[in-house]
Image 1 (cartoon, rainbow, N blue to C red):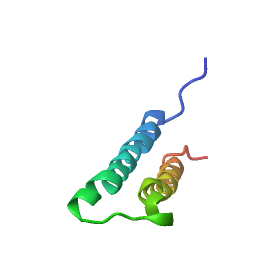
Image 2 (cartoon, helix red, strand yellow):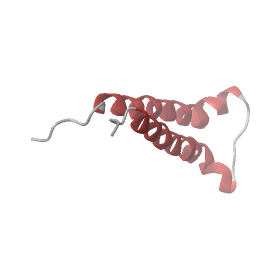
Image 3 (spheres, rainbow, N blue to C red):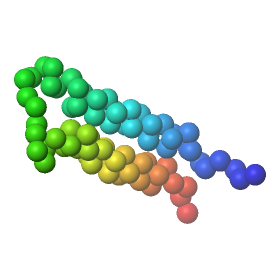
Image 4 (cartoon, one colour):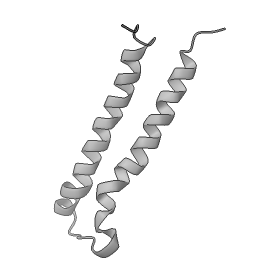
Length: 76
């Protein structure tokens, strides 16, 4: 059995919390914004609310995790 990675719980948390934010923003962009503002993107822009939060959130999660892996890396 392998030993857990140092600060593994933290990296898991730092992926899950922004992941929940991506899910929230996707749901709001698809369903909530249409009720709040009277708009209906059509044509090629119809899929944008579904993928835009992921296109922004996934690289942000990767950069955030990489930053903290470097910050908490053992010295030497």
